[in-house]
Amino acid sequence: MNEAADQIFATLKQSSQSGTPLYLQLRKSIEDAVNRGLIGPGDALPSERDIASKADISRVTVRKAVQDLVKGGILVQRHGSGTFVAPRMERVEQSLSRLTSFTEDMARRGMAVRSAWLDRGLYAPSPDEMMVLGLSSNELVARVARLRIANDTPLAIERAALSASVLPDPAGIGSSLYVALETTGHRPVRAVQRISAANLGDDDARLLEVPPGIAGLHIERISYLASGKVIEFTRSIYRGDAYDFVAELRLSGPGEEGRP
Image (cartoon, rainbow, N blue to C red):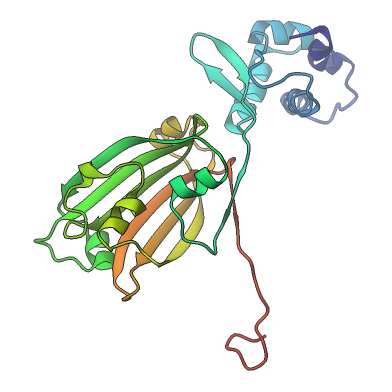
């Protein structure tokens, strides 16, 4: 870190915010320095000992401030290497009015897309899968789970379930599930999505390369064929710091249902 950035620690000695806990003052100083560009993505912070010395505070105070910033996604800690300013995440805006695949959506943005397969196989259906997909207990469900990555940044974990009669060979899917379904005439034409807030668990956070407990988006989607038959049941986790979902709303016209 350069001399100007070092001042974020030294100025705490002269801080007049006597009523504010020191760890909150330090947390704000570091966050302000990141926002002002005094320290940038990938820059390493001094050690706890050095920060404590520069700011004339205890290492316990430093540790609490740093841990708060790691939980907030401002900093990242790498075992054996130290603490660094987290990479800046370019947010992705996705419309809720169009049913597209992740591959198609990212391609339109000119982003390089790839997937890391987490699971592709046939299983006995869970009660939820039986209910949503209309399966009996003696039928099989095809599960497809992928880590979706754009421009080398993991953005989402998608876990899709379909009847094995529709997808008898999950291992044969290429880069896009919807392309595979289209070739057999089973590409969905509409879907209902439910979006809710979720704090990421250890396993999902590790895959998405974010701190455990950070805010994410849980999306449950049920997709339909033109006939009205359910074709896909997907439960996904998206990074909360990377995605904005946008919906266009229209005021109902005269005589239309739902008019206020």
